[in-house]
Image 1 (tube, rainbow, N blue to C red):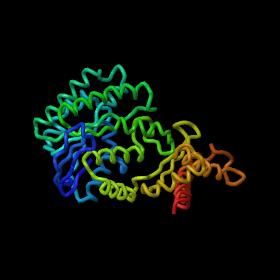
Image 2 (cartoon, rainbow, N blue to C red):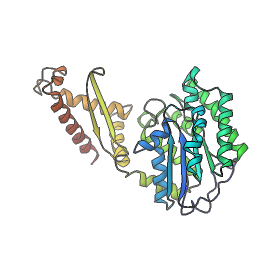
Image 3 (tube, one colour):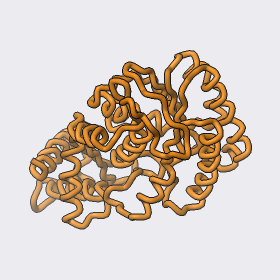
Image 4 (cartoon, rainbow, N blue to C red):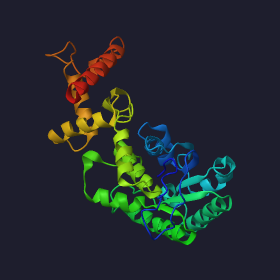
Length: 329
């Protein structure tokens, strides 16, 4: 996602196989069309849409974002709402992230042939309306070599072909995600569930989009540095169930991405596979401290007595934050 007072007079795309982008003036309207990954890219404080906007802002390239991500949507759905959510808003640019649900919905998804037809129509209509188009290849689903990821690779081939054929900018997220996942760094995993982004996944998407928009290394470094101090973008949350979905406690600690990095270093030093494992173990240890002989309760189940559950939850929340802050300050 690249932009400066005129997204720099050298807004050339990272991949020479695709059309060079026009110079990107300031105060552009950018629509972000997509599914839940894009919807969360706006609703999450670490979301890639927010990061792109912030990265442009710090480089003097103000943009007006038009969030147009809806969870569960396929290429059929996006084509059906294109006029309402994109064309009628008259953006200067549109980024198009589509394909994940076409594949992972299985028999209820969209065939490769129909996906290509839908995507062609979306691109054609946007270009006819005078909108600059940036296409995204898909991200992965689960492991880089899972059957769904391999199928997403075939859908991504369609996107690459469309980008070449229509001289669209291309953010090749699929290749970036595959290479990252091959490194097998679970602690900095890109997704929480195989599909939806962790802060690390959103950072990777945002960096790739800004690079595709043409930001140079100096600008990218400036953007990434600014992201580190965005309020609450690195927040960590966890939950421990004593009885699944019936008896559980939760805890959340607001963090910047810079503070999250410090916590990731702690988890790495303790050889935890993910930050989720580390945070859950911390909350469980705080719960266990409340059980005899250290605490007043007979068992973990006793923490959930009607007269004490609310108080215990408040105590655990405060203790969790205090423990995390002690480690990162």
